[in-house]
Amino acid sequence: MRGSPMTVRIEGGPFVNIRRDRPYVFQADVRGAGSALTARGRITRPFDLGRFDAVMTLEGRDLSDLYLLTGVTLPNTPSYRLSGALNRDGRVWTFKDFDGRVGASDLSGQVRIESGGRLRVDAELASRRLDIDDLAAVLGARVRTDPSGRNTEAPIVVGGKLLPDAKLQTDRLRTMDGSLTYRAGAVKANHLDVRKVDLGAVLKDGILKLDPISFDFNRGSLNGTARIDATQEIPRNTVDLRLAGYPLESIVPARNGSVPVSGLALGRARLEGRGASIHEFAAASNGSMSLIVPNGRMRAAFAELLGVNASAGLLKLLSGDQSVSAIRCAVADFDVRGGKAQARTFVIDTDVVLAQGKGSIDLGAETLNLRIEGESKKPRLLRLWAPITVSGPLTAPRIGVDAGDVVSQGGLAGLLGTLVAPVTALFAFVDPGLAKDADCGRLMAGAR
Image (cartoon, rainbow, N blue to C red):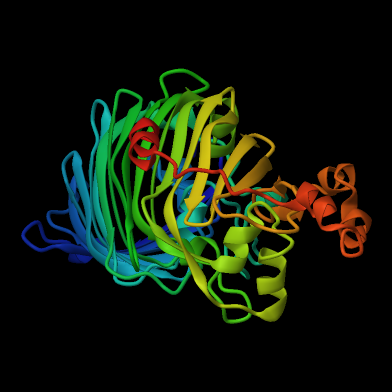
């Protein structure tokens, strides 16, 4: 079937006992493409195969493999086992009231398939408790399996990439129309703290529209829409996602029991471009990305260190000082061209330091190259001008200090020399604290 070996076995009662006014009972077993379909049912009127009822169980290593047996386009998934009621009424097939698992998640719902002419598939699906790793597989993460074909680990992304690079099979999307609704009432504990998921999709004439794309977190939410034009071999995609009220504590985790930064983040990503995978799309995308923190709190030591303040930030950090500074606002606004996100605005305004940044994010290589320089709002003694750098892969960024700038100012030796120098020699290390408050309203309006 479609180039894939298939085995079919059907058993029924003796023909001599057939009556036109009695259903004919049968059992069926279909295997191929790493999938197995077993059914126990009855043909309402022998032998009108256009109408029958059955209880069916589906199981296999990946739901997408069923395309080879059924012609129905399904997403990539971990291993699955589903059981429910199968009914055929002429050109309409329904698989309803089914329940089971996909990966480590439960899945239930119903699917309606109308054949004859252009194939149409409509599905209403739900999970009582979703494992977010299973959803990652649907989005293009690869699944490791053991030799028997069953999962041994949660889905992982091949090559250590953050963005999945499994390619969308556009030729399959062009063979059918349909719709999908999916809701997960609860989500297993995960590092993103996702609590609920709500997805909707409509496919028509090779164009897939995703609306809504909705993730509820413990605090905050991510909502948006996407459009995939699969009428060409390399699809053209548009995405518009909004982040609302996401806690900074989930982005910057606590260290030694201390939360470095707190507050709620707002964000938006509007991107368009070509690509057969999420990674390909991001690497070639154009548009904008922004992240805003209207107000929040930052550990005072880190606020001072936005400009590497030797007299305040380092001492507070080394002494374990837990006092906090207010974040008046933080705005990071990037212009994206060809998968390169260049900072247009990058400002972190606290009550003691105004920090401004520059640099870029390479969505294709999935790397950061950012530089943040702070300017004190208060007079400070013994301050070394040393920008903070954020570099390396998105999955494990490195935060450091540009020591070259310290050396150019005489470095630590110069600083120690001032301890025995005349008072006038200290002036080279005195920061008069001339930075002013940022115009937060204007900055945030410009980023949206």
